[in-house]
Image (cartoon, rainbow, N blue to C red; front, top):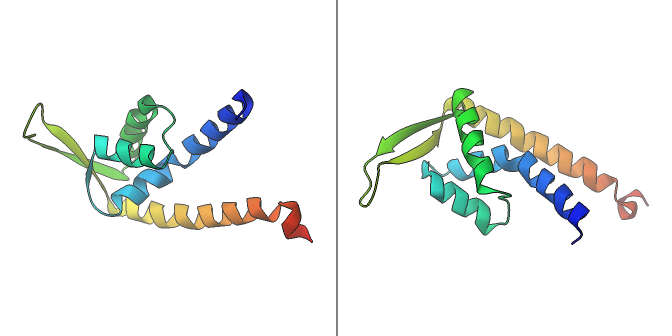
Length: 113
């Protein structure tokens, strides 16, 4: 992969992180490192530092909430969960994503024959 391709792929991944976080949290609350691990497992996390500001922004927007819980080892942990607003946003983003993928795929030369 060229450097330019790598940059473009990173930008695409960044663009879908909010949807991905909501998908992860659709199964229930998750600890920050669990979210990071889930994104890394499917090669969707560009840089770990991008996730923390995004989680804060989503919390401030009312789509996420969090709670602190004591950890069996170390400091307390912050667990994130979706709010009702987050559930609505997830449904809207799922529709927008499907439409986006369909539009992009329709531009493929094989689909235009």
